[in-house]
Image (tube, rainbow, N blue to C red; front, top):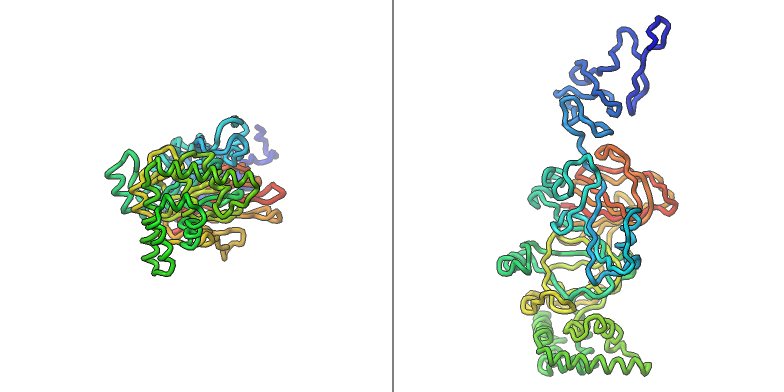
Length: 502
């Protein structure tokens, strides 16, 4: 170093600040004067330190609980800078009903987000789980964080949930966020309310593993097909008259009772519907298999002869029978609405609502529970008695099952899917190509962000370093933290964000 009188004064470069020479009488570059106390305090020995006055005097209202360093190092006397926004690696479930290989949206997201991922072209990729569920706790992709999974980190940092969410849900993330790729039908099922969930869990914990309810919402990513809720009685009566095999299974007495109920009050309709559905579900196996085989044979012959089988839902019947031959669930198509969702459309499935997903790719969000009561189209445990007793027997048209989002008044890029339960809300964020800088706003809830389309670099004061976001990237954002997106894609971005807005 040259210390001669004419030499240039030594300099020290601070990230985020200008280069500053040291001159006689000035504060040395190795210290900073605290704005609140006026005391001179030493700089941390780290070139990554951010801010004009680090560390602030403990009495300063501007003091942070831990020195923040973009390199993740410790400030003198301080703890590791707190990371509250970070990327996740999420669990893929390979259930048999999932789409195969790269036909699956789940597989495509996995391959896009992880260049090292090996997609097996012969294996199903059914679900991507984003959350803290014990059977699929997300892995934290930041080795500066000592906890390995999101569940562990939230348990140690429950304040990240937001004050209301933390208090309401006892320090637990209240939702599970998913992507589903459905190739063959899922079971005919319903989810219990909290009261029934508690009873079922106490009586049969091997089948009902927790005491929570499980409302859920599906948002289509591709054209999506499902069954949901009981059809209007007029439609069911039409099937009873058009499909003799269906009427034989129900029996004339119950069928006539339902036909007469069309003019009755809603309670009479629900009672007649319960009788008909219960008779079908409790029919002896030999009886319903014989009727189903006769129906399938007749419909197949009509299709071969070029006849219109829409009056018997022939196409859907043959589709389900090919997947689950001899299953009582094949007859459920005459009771339940067929719902067709286009991308961006959704359906909400509340407690006691009978439903089954049939085909397509969707975003799904639900309360964090495994409680499912099944009664058909499945090799799993079937609980017909519980299902028939618990169901909501209120008929309604399929159009009533489509759940429409509302555009945010504060941000035209955001559409809210806000169901009538407190556990979760989903935001769809569509950023047009004309916007190159976008702020994911802070909310008083932990949230999980999924990139469906587009690329960007994300920055946040709670993330320390930049984050590359691309199709399939998943980000955890703590409550009251924001993320700036610097878009690099020509087609804008499409993201979904799950949260809990109390």
